[in-house]
Every structure is written in structure tokens, then in C-alpha cells.
Image (cartoon, rainbow, N blue to C red; front, side, top):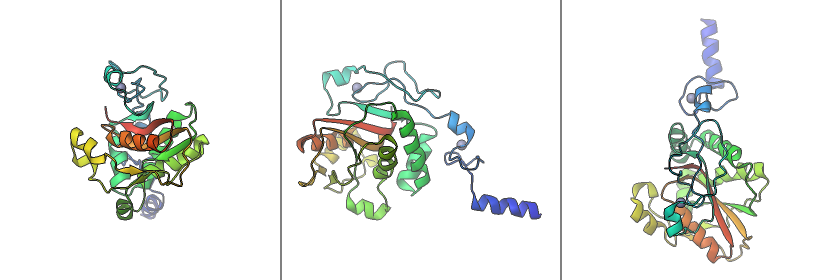
Length: 242
Ligand SMILES: [Zn+2]
Ligand SMILES: [Zn+2]
């Protein structure tokens, strides 16, 4: 009985549970071995929008993606982002980690997402600065943290890239994109961002966000950065919804 009580005390003090599936994990690891080997690294994808190229599926062995192809839709209508890189494809276990991080205050889940980004992007050429896609201050007050900033801070420090926090602001408190369809998403975030006049943007900036769905938010943020003087804007996200 004493041993059982001791075990319960230990698991209360050191939960050791997998952040994705809740299974017993190993001390000091955020994911259980099963979830760790199931991470769906994003496959070879269009350089401009990160949608997987025909026939490409998420793989669980290799976080590298060196694709340089452009899909037909981006060739026909080039998006404002020069490159979009996704660490993972949105699916199990990202579909648990990302919402828990974004909507349920689970900062440990965010730590996992950021570590996946570091692993996936370590070999990419470094931009001049990383800019997190900001929340409006009213939503920041509600949530207590800015999820893109929480991802961007450890990523910037691991890759040795300056982090420009506050270089991009959300000027309008928009309806959450998750409640809208694709057409409304674009309209919803049009002119939602601003760069304060005191900010001196470097030439090559990478936007960081958690999940890319239609890209409407990232495109609107990129256009704002170009208007403020950026020469090239890319985006790095933890997960891409295919
Ligand atoms: Zn697990
Ligand atoms: Zn594309």
C-alpha cells in the first residue's frame, strides 16, 4: 500500500504523461515513444504555400524537406510569401497538441511544437529576423499568452536569429479564423495588421505561427510587412493543414 501511495505521489509530482495521448511516458520526455515515432513530418511541398506535392504524404522518419517546386495554383497567382515551411502535417498528434496549446493554456504542448520546429528548420538559411504573428491585445488579455510568440522565442534563440517582438501588431480584433470559411477568412484579416512607425524592419523576415490553414492570416501579415519596408517575407509554421 505504501508503494502504491508512493507511486501515486510520484506521478502527481512528476506526471511523466505523454502530452499528446496521456499515456505513461518517460521522465523528462514530453511525448511517449509511440507518439514520438508517429510525428508526421511534413513531406515535400510547394515552396510558396507548403501544400504537399502530388503523391507526397507525411512521413515519420525525416524532418527535412528540400523541395523547391511550386504548385500550379501558386504559379498562376503567386502568394505574398516567398517561402512557406511547415514542420509537420496537421494530424495525429498535432491535432491534440496545437488546440491544447492555443485554447487551453497548455504551454508544455507549445514547448513540444517549438522543439519540432527547431528540428525541422535547423538546416534552413537564416533570415534577418523572426516576427511572430501577433494576437490583438484584447485576446492576449483573455488568453494570457501569445501562442505565436511562445513558439517563436525558443525557435529564434535555438537558431540564433533575432526575434522582433512588437514589430507587427494586430490593429483589429478580428473574429477567430476557425469560425469562418475560406472566403470569409481572407476578408476577415484584410488590413488587420500594422507595423508601428518606430520599427525599422530588416530585408528578410520570417513570420512564425502555429497552424496554417488557408494562409489568409499569414498573407495579410506579409503584405503589411512589405508595406513597412520588408523585401522578402517567408513563413514557418508548426503544422500545415493539407
Ligand atoms: Zn503519446
Ligand atoms: Zn503552392
